[in-house]
Image 1 (cartoon, rainbow over the protein chains, first blue to last red):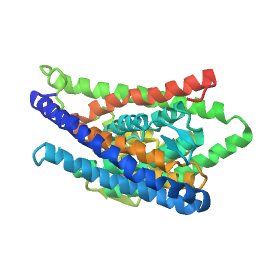
Image 2: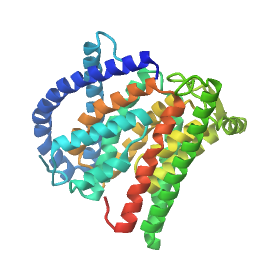
Image 3: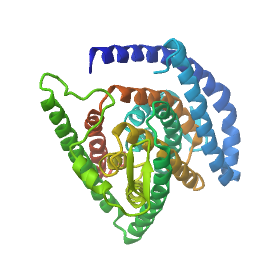
Image 4: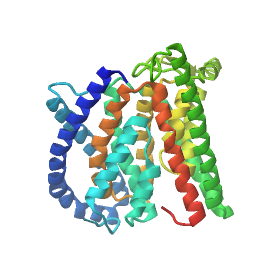
Length: 85
Length: 307
């Protein structure tokens, strides 16, 4: 790896470390706020309407992926002054 | 934290860390990482059926994040990914049927274990030989360079002559893939995807360990594109697998959602890291992954413990 690449990797890792801290705080809030309330509804769905549960499960994981990707990209852009990679 | 769907008590931090590690591997190598996620979930007492189904759900989310990132970096061939999804789903069904047939014959564990060890070892040995040879050739062109003369994101392969020969098979319809710079028969793409799906259905997981190398060596797709496209394709095939497992009651989506919070950031880190490595170096770094899979299977075979 060239010295320029090494500097870029170092910069990226530093931004990631900072991003991890902010992200961890957001995720903790998310655990308590969202998953806690979703839990009982999902259990009910899983026992009574398994097909609906299967569709909801896929939609939830894809939805979370899209939201988290936007959050992490936004955080990274913010931390690296407008550049996401 | 109690997860009521699978009736399991698991520390969420453990799930986030496991998700993060698998996310890094997935983003960098284009694999689902089920060979690590499955045993990691088993270690904390989650039943095997939930470990498999939940892991697939988490793979969907992780692949969305990593594929989106790879797409932004220009590493996804959407046309190729969509075609491959068809072959993968067909192959996965065939693999599942084979498993059922072996179950009836009564020797499923031994056959699946031996086949998986042979496949894992073959992939590792072949990729070690090829990437080593490619890097040595690059270094001989530029003897002054410490790490070979391949700049980041560049690609070449010592197996290129075979790939070129395969691309010359003009079995219609021919498909042009402008993003990958390849024109190849549809049937070869479907065959590669089918074999990947077969391994997925037969051995479990997303089978990225066979699909990513096949895309590079058989289809001639540049490594960075193979990683990104494989992840895109995994979204479709793992969604199918998740649905199939969920209706059998094998998916605890709450565990998958928690794991995915770690995977989301790990997948981004892995995907961005590919930008700093040449194709053969990514392939060389890939070599230990199937070996880990083989080691887990050998351990299971000789101890009788399911990790």
